[in-house]
Every structure is written in C-alpha cells, then in structure tokens.
Image (cartoon, rainbow, N blue to C red; front, side):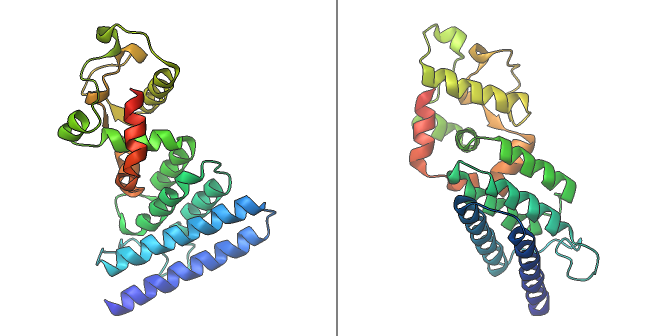
Length: 228
C-alpha cells in the first residue's frame, strides 16, 4: 500500500511538472497566473487529503503509474487549469481544485466524462454552483433554514423583483441542461419553478459531489435562497 501511495504521489507530481512547463510557454497575465497557481494548490491539497484519509485510488491507470502511455489525468488537468486561467469568478477556484483532486479516486468517471464535467463547470456561474448546493439540502433544511417556497410562482400570483427573475433564469438553465429536476414536474417557464422541489441530478449531482459544493459558505447559500 505504501508503494502504491508513493507511486501515486510521484505520478501526480510529474503530471503537474509537465503541465507547469506547458503553461510556462504561454503568456499569462498576473491574475491568470494567480488563478492557475491557486487551482494547483487546492487540487494538490485535496489529492493528498484523499490519500491520507484512506480513499482508494482508481485502478484504471488514470495517473499513469504503471505505463509510459500518456495518462488520462494530463488531459483533464490541462482542461481544469485552462478553465481556471480564464475564470473571472474567483470564488469558483477552490471548487475547480476539488474537482481535479477528486477525479483520481472516482473510477466511474471516464476521462471523456470528466472533460464534459469540466466544460459544464466552466459554463456555470458561481451562483449556479450555490444553487446546486441549496437544492441538494434535505427537505427540513430547505423548509426551516432556507424557507424555500413549496408552490410555484404561478400559484403565488405576485410580481417578481429583478433578483428573483435572475435566479429563476439561472435555475431554468440548470434544468434545461439536465442538472436539476423539479420532482418530476416539467418546467416550461419560470413560473413553473417550485424552489422547494428542486434537486440536483445527472451531471449536476456529479458536480455537487466532485466539486464538494456542500462546503460552499452558508452565508452564500442563505443569500441565494432569499432571492426566491
């Protein structure tokens, strides 16, 4: 086991070294360098914590421990770091790091699936990540802490403020991308949304778990919930 862990750490270090050389050949602004550097730190920290906690590495040679063939991790890492480089919402950076640091321990997520998840994570706003975290809560928390409405906006029959319209648009985008469901109810427009009944599904659930969105600060979740 010790040899496996040592090999994993070495493979991880080599991958980051190679990617560092790749990025060194590109012109990066100061903020871009900071975002990439922070993502490397967050993902490496998550990777090490996973090893130390006893999580099992995937057995499909994702890190390239036993082969000279280009390991899948390199492609996924490049995608994550390029996403971080161009990410203007810096609150997303720790969660991109979590995503990369968790992939070596998720055998059910292929390289291709991971690339798709990274692409979707890139397209989501930080507020949409918070929405996934809010929608993943238990019914008790949704009802007693976030006070999410248990009826849709058509039944509520009231005017909507700009912040509510904005959060409903972000919610319907998640729904149209198949990342959330409304307990089997078809959402044809904003008025059909029932916040209490929303739940992550598919890649929304995958991103919630891999990015560890449960660790989003509580004040951010409360702020978003109030917009409904």
